[in-house]
Length: 110
Image (cartoon, rainbow, N blue to C red; front, top):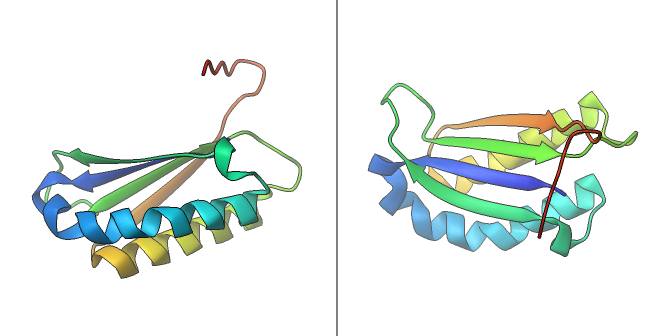
């Protein structure tokens, strides 16, 4: 259940929007392959935000459920891949944060 939110600096959103929109299917495919999920398990969103000028232009936050195969090294690789893809398509600096949720307390209703 990868839940990816891309927070994009509103002052740079218009220039990055087309590239990000085109990238979303490939980004979802990478998440599916590297995190071993199907596309219907993924939720991706791009959100323009007010941000300070000294912060990265894109802040990617990925929330996932833990699995034994999702080691720190694997998640760092996922983060590096996402960062590189996002930077290449947008020309913006990118920060990536990945959090594993507590399966005992996590609730999802669809």
